[in-house]
Image 1 (cartoon, one colour):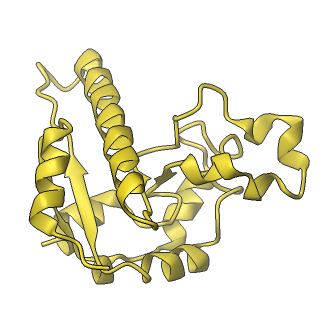
Image 2: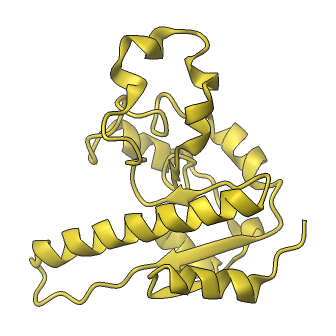
Image 3: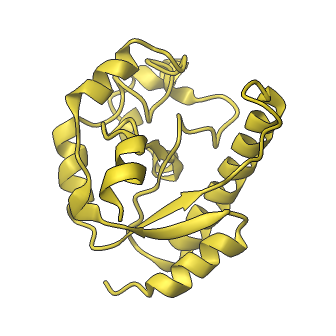
Length: 170
């Protein structure tokens, strides 16, 4: 499928992102060390969300899926903090980023058959993730239609975001 990168970048910016640019898919590095960081549960999502370990796909499966794509879009929302401990601005920027991300993903899913959204942190589309409900124990739970709505984390596929933004996406 052909993507018009300039149009997609403009759409991302119109959704409220501060910056948007092409992502070199071939430069993605899938690292087991990142998955190990998840198991330490620093973000409090390990074992509590379909898009986080241990429920998410394997590193190898994630790498194979990403390799099917010819184009990636990297987006950023910038917040301007008063000091290093400006938690309020961090939270506001995170909320704005997630809202912009979900809106852009919705638009892209209407237009394209296959979209692989990978945001920052665990999926937060639903107020309560069904991963912790009795439904999650059902063998068919992984294939329910609502699971296609979820937005995976860049970390769940085991590549560190800082590596992409500082070294690989140029």
